[in-house]
Image (tube, rainbow, N blue to C red; front, side):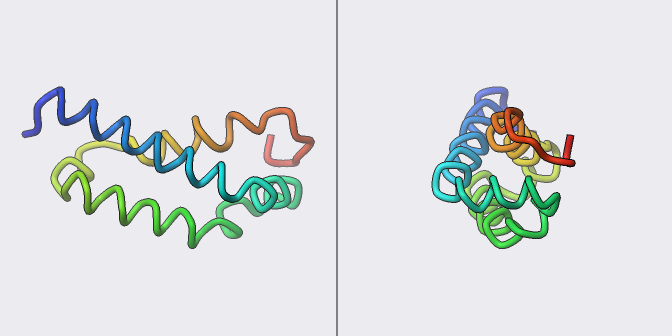
Length: 88
C-alpha cells in the first residue's frame, strides 16, 4: 500500500490536472453545463486527464482512491456554480 505522502501527492496531481482541464476549456465547460451534457462534451479531455493521472500515480493507487473524480467535481464543476444550468 502507498504511504500517506503518496496519497497526498496523488491528490495534488489530480487537482492540478482538473484545474488545467478547467482553465483550457472554459467556454466548452460553460456551454456543456448550460446544455446539460458536461460529461459527454468533455469526455475526451477527462479521459486524457485520467490516463495521465493513472500513468503518473500507478494503477494500485488509482484503483484504491477516487481523487481524480473528486478533483473534477471540486475544481471544475463546483467552481461553475454561478452558471444557470439544469445540471443543478
